[in-house]
Length: 377
Image (cartoon, rainbow, N blue to C red):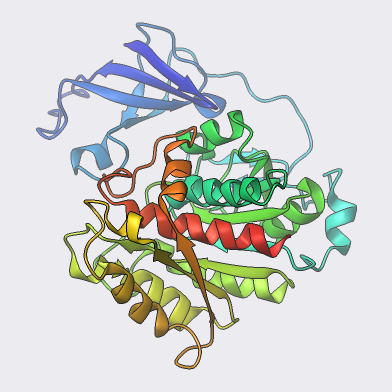
């Protein structure tokens, strides 16, 4: 075993896989694999150490980032954590359940504030169904602020548990936080490892407003969303519930559309059916649905399909007045926004496609950030 890259609470390893007892190593798992250890949970494996791996998703070729996951380092178990405050159990009733201190629980220094907090006071909250939208949304907000001569917004990211549970899995969160693009990551539900922990999306949002002091919030699941090719069987459908939470708490919900000009699946071309289901069927509170309108220069990009804007506008129109309950907000997007996306401190990738392969995906997220920034002006 050898060590590789390290970020946040994650350590990349190269591990030689050996059969367990008389069991055969699955054919789909190569003899040497990349593995990921969450160091806060399993400790830091030394070079040459034995590790116990979970290779189930890797063997099936699922989207785990190509990693086996370290369950334990049997010859060097980490020390028990010292006694301390906190009784929130995340990843509950699994062998790797983790005890954390929630911002909203009784032992927290923020409990008194959150016990009384009941409003977001009009705070703009951008909601997106894919984790890959996060850096693009923040890039759009920062670009809008710079264009207006305002300081960059103080951004909190609320990570839901629709995808990965450990925040440490996300190199994007680590990179954005390190660059000062996000000021805090708040992990809610069963997700854990953020700068603050919270029990629900509601208390996560209130933590962003009253503890972090955010000017703008982005809510999205962690990496590794789950889809089944059905209308309702997608982990990102919960964004409709997030819109409801934002509205209930007196925030300003901003719906980021999942858009693609390059996806080979018709149900994801233009506006994804996941967006129309979540915002059209699940979200019962009106939100601002932000629709990009490409300038002629941007529309001339090789990967920007002809009439994509018209398709997106028509699909978004089913969500907005008078056909739907939401408000339509058109934001012009030019090559200056594309340049801002190129300057993100982390890589941009969605469904294996980068910025130049599918610029519409990232521009659609970025204009939601532009609008949210304009709301706080």
